[in-house]
Amino acid sequence: MSTLMSYAALICVVAGLGAGLIALLAVGDPRLALRTALDLWLAAGLLRLVLPPSWQSLLAAAAIVAIRQLVTRTLHVGTSDEAANTPHRLGR
Image (cartoon, rainbow, N blue to C red; front, side):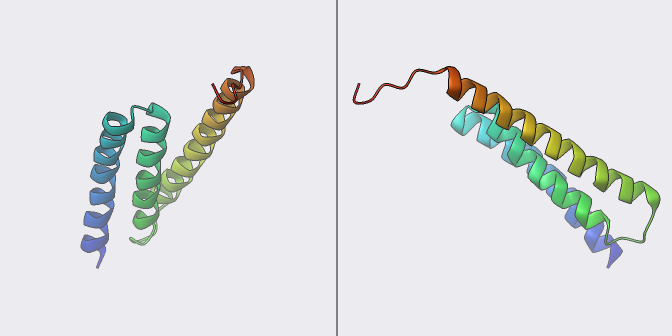
């Protein structure tokens, strides 16, 4: 069972890289690409918690969650600032 979870976590890491790259190429928004990759990397970290417990896996999952939250909040603030500085044109 632990081998299966290790492979599933590895697949999530690779899928995060691939999905982030595809999102970047398809949409052209690096923020969306980063959020997509971080979501799959979070899934990989959580899958590793299923493996035999260790402090290293717990700290890795906590670090991924903290980084994801920090990046998401930073990107959200950047988007709000851009929206506030952009004049709205109705019907034009």
